[in-house]
Image 1 (tube, one colour):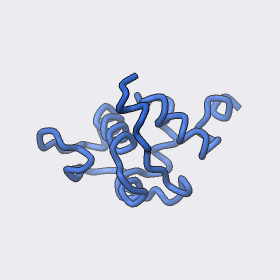
Image 2: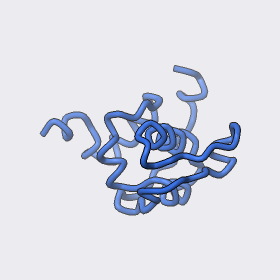
Image 3: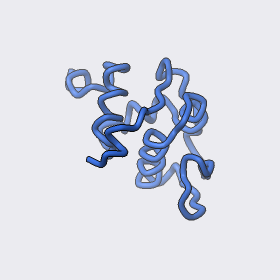
Length: 106
C-alpha cells in the first residue's frame, strides 16, 4: 500500500441512501476527482462503472462529490468487486456494516 493511501482521509457520506448519482448514461468526472486525460465513463459498461466508482471513492474530497457521482444501489451491488485501498474499504465498511464481508455473506 502506498503511503498516500495510508495517510489519506477518505470522504464518507452520512448514509448510503444519500448517494443519488446517475445509474445510466455517460459520466465525465470533475478534474479534482479524475485529473487524467478526459474520459467519459459509460455506466452500461461494468468495467467503466467499476473504474469510475473506484476513482470517486478514492479521490472525492467531500460527501457532496460522493452524492453527485455514486448511487447507493450500485455501491451495494458492486462493493465486493471494487479495487480500493484497504484504508478506504475499512472506513466505508466501518460506517456501513452492510458492506462488510460478514454482512454480504448473511
